[in-house]
Length: 437
Ligand code: DOR
Ligand code: ZN
Figure 1 (cartoon, rainbow, N blue to C red):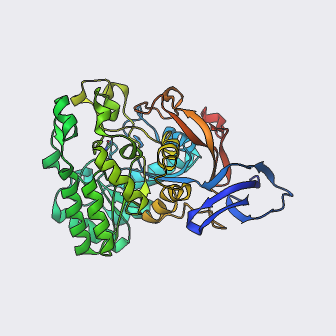
Figure 2 (figure 1 turned 90 degrees about the horizontal axis):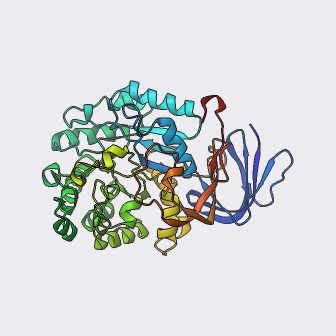
């Protein structure tokens, strides 16, 4: 493996409190040294003056559609989209067909992601068999097969007793349960946020309370069991208020937010754009402001894309028939650099923390740092790059993004995963010529 030396970049490594102009060297797939004026003999030298180097980003909430809907995304196409988006580690949700509630599925995902030979994929296994909310999956076996956390994402575990048991088991294994918090009784039939826009558009609404009731229940159960709970895609003011309180009381509660809930409101639905139909729904300006504040104050730990690919024929239909979800792997970094750092909501270092060490800690994975000896997952960000989002050029197999045409600033120029350059000049390097990548 080629030895790499990145010269003269601004190194941001929140896990180690580093924000400084330094060199980084990579040997045998690991970070070999971080320091001033490292010697270059024997290294391929890459000049990164005026660029920002960070750990490869970690996306803890991605839907790869394999097995089952390979027309929408495969493990390989998802890895390619992640790589050009700056992500070197992703966690994939279990709502595939078959569901990832069996170690054979977990193993298949890991094997296929290794064959794709790009980034690291961490399967999140189902809490309950078939995501039916009734019987717990074999959590021990799934962890042994390589799962890193559990979730019934897409659905809420509605039964209080089942959720309690799941938390008791996850505590025993010291892993996070990832809660998709939604009271099905309150959200049933809902299309968008319940409020002004649902009224004027004549669409059935999903009240904030549908999310908040589920979060309240899970905080109570986290306290009862002492387990770790992670709330994914939080979207309302009330949700972050309760999570802040739970954290203050010392519970093991963490949460993430999506880029779309940070940048769009339900006003985006005014023309019935089905690409803005997501679950939980886009909320109000007041909610978005609360999310920004919670992000800045550390109540929200991580940002995760909830990359949810859907085929054209599932989006180009009557609004009420369209699937929920939007893709995000290829827009998340530029969008967050532009709208969250650009608007002064977070510093660049804070943003990188939400994309690296924070999600890595939730998942107990050894990623998201530039510590000596850790996997050489590094990205080189050009914060001044001009990006015009064009879904025609996406590596994802799906195109369901409402950000198409947006002009953004900043992108990952170069991506290194496990010591190999996988993206150069914002383009995927052809590592698998036989596989026609
Ligand atoms: O919008 C969403 N899409 N939210 C979810 O929870 C599931 C996801 C999907 O799988 O399409
Ligand atoms: Zn979800």
